[in-house]
Each structure stands twice: as C-alpha cells, then as structure tokens.
Image 1 (cartoon, rainbow over the protein chains, first blue to last red):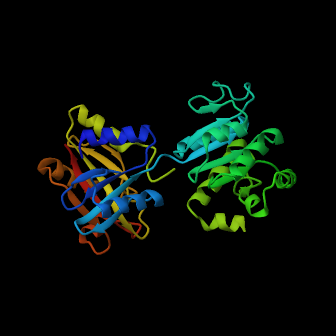
Image 2: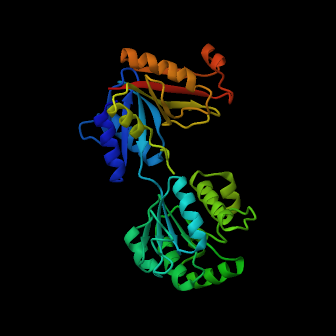
Image 3: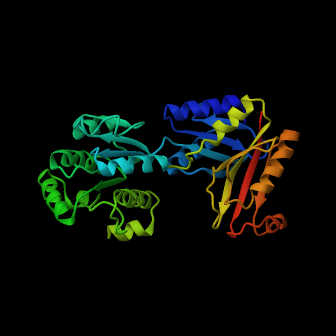
Length: 232
Length: 108
C-alpha cells in the first residue's frame, strides 16, 4: 500500500465512482480496477465483486487476489422534512447511508433543521427525476400528505429502488394504494411499498419509529428472513 | 451501508504516515463461520503503538498488531490465518468459533 494509492481510493470515494483495490496475497502487488490494462480474469472478478457488493478473495491462475470493493454508499431519499426525518437523518448517516431530504415546503426543509445533509426543495416527482433512484437507493415518504407522498411513490415504483417505505396507518395506506392503483400501478408494484413503514417493534417515540424504518431497510438490503416474513 | 465502514481506516493510516509514523494496514480477506467482521474490515497500526479500526470483535487484534510490527520492520506482507485448525488461534482465542484470514502490509 502506498499513500498515492490511498489518495486515489479517497478520490474515487469522493467522486462516488465504484472501484476495486486488488491485492495479490502472495506478494502484495496492488492495482485499482477498473483498469484497461488489467488481466481479463481479474477484471471480470472485480466486476462480479462490485455487482455483489462484497469484498472477497478469488483464486486466479496468477495467485490468490483479495478484491476490496468500494461502492458508493447506499442512498436514502427521505420525502418530508418532518419531525421523524430529524431523527431518521442522523441515524441513517451513522449507518453510512447517503441521505437526501426532499421537501418543497421551505419552512420544513431548512438548513437549521437539517444541518450537514443534502436538502432538495423541489416537488418530490421533480426531485426523484433528478435523483434517479437505482438498485442502491431507498425511498421513504413521511409527509402524510398525498400531494407530496404520492408523486414520490409513483416515481419510486417506476425505479429500481430496493426499498420503498411509506409512513401512515393501515387505513391511510389502503387509501394510498387505491390512489396509486388509479395511477396505473399493479398489485405486484404496490407490494413493493412497505406500509405501514418499518419493522413491527411497537415503536412509539420518534427515534423509535426511525429505528424501525432503518431496521427494515437493513433487513431488506441484507435479505434477512425477517424482511421476507414481513413481506409475506 | 455497504462493505465499507463509517470510520475511514485508510484515511487515518495516510494521515499517520504523513505525520512521519511507520504504519501497517491489516485487512480481513476471508472469513468462515461466525466471524464478527466481514472481509474488507481494516485496522491500521503504527510502530509507536497507535491503532484504528478493527478486524474482529477484539479477539485477534493483539496478535495482528504484533505481526504488524514485524511487517513494519521487514517491509514484507503477511497473510495470517486465525481459526480452529490453528494452534495460535486457540491461544489467541477466537471466541466466536469462526475463522479469518488477515493480510498485513506496510504503508510505504
């Protein structure tokens, strides 16, 4: 390892470029991938490790290589700069999530209420069009206001977001599903929405609700049996 | 939330090196069974005894730090094997019963 290599890794992280540091365990030879000059077998193994988001040792003809995966952080889009968001945002940051808060209501989405986090004051559909949720993005709606939640959920359902959660009671959620059905989303799509949001841990306080939401997000991301049971 | 951690061990290691310390970096490269930290977990160790990060729940850090001193001295990387089949692992005591391999290299 060299200071130059660490600087290159830090640069890629800052630019949110996915990257793999490959180390040959026999002699410590290192290179950063993708690199057009890399051996095809190593390049393919690095692509697979990035896809699986898993650092691992691979056995190749020229020796065992450790592939250290540096994927950009998973993103969490929080729609609604409400009280629960104020607890959710710092807890999500602690988990290493890259958080974006969306709320067009300026009084809610203020710098004072949400320091050190990206806040977008566009309407949720416009914000999500700009954010472009991918398979490493979670979207959680917290506003309780159909004018704000519905367009966000509509865009999230049209994306590959790995987790979609909507705050609201069972009754609120049923009404919401009805509206989303009217927008053309079928049952399979609607089943992607976790609502009421969060694991059923009988959360009462605001931080407890935030904890339930993040616990469910982690369970879904890591393929926990718990999440599958909850979805069933 | 991915395979990396909130604490940026590499950045800490680079800062220590820039400040004139001799530094080694240890990385978990493989795990079996119920090991506490996933592959990619890292620890930085200096010749002066500073440590950042972790490669287990605390059971093998001492042995890794010792190996790191050797790597800092010789410049040669090492691949350490901690597991039930390893005498030393019993000594060190990987309480969880898992196995891990740890690569130790010098930050030049």
